[in-house]
Every structure is written in C-alpha cells, then in structure tokens.
Length: 351
Ligand code: SF4
Image (cartoon, rainbow, N blue to C red):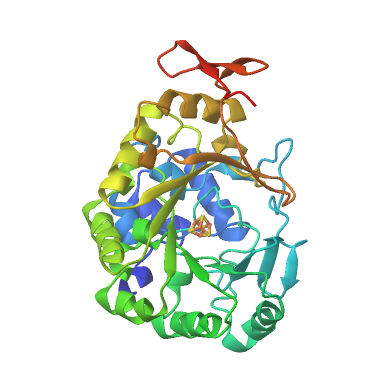
C-alpha cells in the first residue's frame, strides 16, 4: 500500500506529471474543489501517454472541464442505490443479491464512476460496528444468498479489516457466494500479494469481479495479479464499461477480451455507461454498443464474449441488449440471420 501513498491527488501533481491541456487543467482544478477527487497510482500513471490527451488510459483518470456539464438524462445516483438502501451501507435491488458498500476509497478515481456521489468523499473504510446493522439484515433475510462487497474498492482496505468483513459474512449461513468488486488488479496490481490471497483463500467461494476497460491495462503486473488470483482458486470475472473514445471499437474490445481469457479472467459484462451526472462526454449511444456486440458475435470465441447490459436508470434492474437474429417467425418455422450474413431456417419439432 506504500504505492498508494505515492499517488497523484492534486491538480499540481498532475500538471507536474503530464503536459495538461487547458481543459484537463481546468477539470483538475475543479475536481480538487468539488465532485469526484483525483487519485492516480504510480502504476496507472505509468500506462498513461504523457503527451497524448487522447490516450485511453489518460481519459479514464484525468478530469476534463466537461465534468461540470450536465446533459439530458443525467442523474446523481443513476442506479437508485440510495432509494434501495435496506440498511446502512447495504443496497438490495434483487431478491437474492445485495451490495455491501464498505469504503469510499479507490486506488484510482475513474472519471466515469457510477458512485461519484460517494466515492472519495473522505469517509474511508466503514467500521465493523457501523456494518453490523447490514449484517443483521442479511441474517434476517436468508433469501439473500449472494453478497457483493464493493465501495469504493474493498481491496483498498487493510487486509485484516477486509478479512473481518468476509469472516462476518461467512458466519451468515444463508450467504453462499461473496463477490469482491475491485479495480485494484488494474490500478494497483501490487496489492494482489501472496499474503492477501492467503488471508482470503480460507473463505472461498470468493469471486473477484474486476474491471478492465482497455487492452493497455493488461500490463505485465496486472496479468501477474490475475494469475495469482486464479492460481489461488478465485474465479475472476471482468466487467468493462463502454466508454466513448476509449474502447468503443470492436477491434479494441476483441483485443481486451482475448487478453482477459489468456489471463484466465472471464469477460462477464460489457456495461452501457450509467448516466452519471458530468460524464456525458464519455457516454456512447446505446446503438453503438449493440453494433459492437454484433460485430464481435461469431468472430470471438464464446468464452470471450460478455453480455452487453444496460443497468436501467432508477435501479430497476439490468437488461441484456442482444441484437436480433430473428428475421421472421411463422408457425413451426423461424428464419435466423447468422454472423455470416446468411438466413437459415430453423424448424420446430411437431407438437
Ligand atoms: S474503482 Fe470503481 S468505485 Fe472506484 S472510482 Fe473506479 S469505477 Fe468508481
């Protein structure tokens, strides 16, 4: 965690590290005063092109003055998490799953963050005592079998503290799966130490939900972190966010998804960006994602192909967006369009 202490956290730090454009400098000054703060680890900074404002890593971590703009549909809390809070720090939007928000800290503050309303707000790690009402709620609701530990980034907490949370969850017999939602393999891969995996391993099944958005993020240190997790028996899943000018290109995403499966990480979701206030400049139209998924279908092995998902505004639930391959339907006969551009008849069995 010493690397975390050497992170960039101010506009002046950023201006010393990179040749900032006027829009970036104004964005960084604004971020210091309001909204989502700045934090960039030395590792993530090492991936940034210092002279190219269009660098896909730079655009994810360097604020722009565009963050001060609000566009139609923007929301402060796009997933309605505040409205779905069932106990302090616990959000439940589905009958069998709940989200436990254990810290507001992250190694890097991503400029498109869905939880920009609360991450980096200075609260730090939530104490065990303050999480206890959430734990009691989970005990009283055995229908919740899957808990996602998130934040912020739970792997930015001290190991002992994180392990205490996991141990407490494991004492709730109805909880079958615990997922750790973390961007640390991308932004602070040195955090995935042998000690960390050794401390967490006794509490399997523990799934790691990580978040790579661009093939440049698959740096050797990140691949080592993913390998360490996989070797220690953690199923590792990746959720990418579709970002304008960063990864909204089938070739870029194909390279990312292929790289992830080489590192034994399953591309799980490609998420349409949530309409978070101040992020309109990074959001793509829905049709763009649909076209990308269509371009990848049949050209990328199924294990590398994530579901394209819209998490509907207001916390109404996730919707998979699948391009339609059905050309027509008549009783007993469906005409299907394949990725080869041919139409094929599928005949139903007789009733
Ligand atoms: S790591 Fe996750 S929670 Fe933290 S700023 Fe990035 S997207 Fe938001």
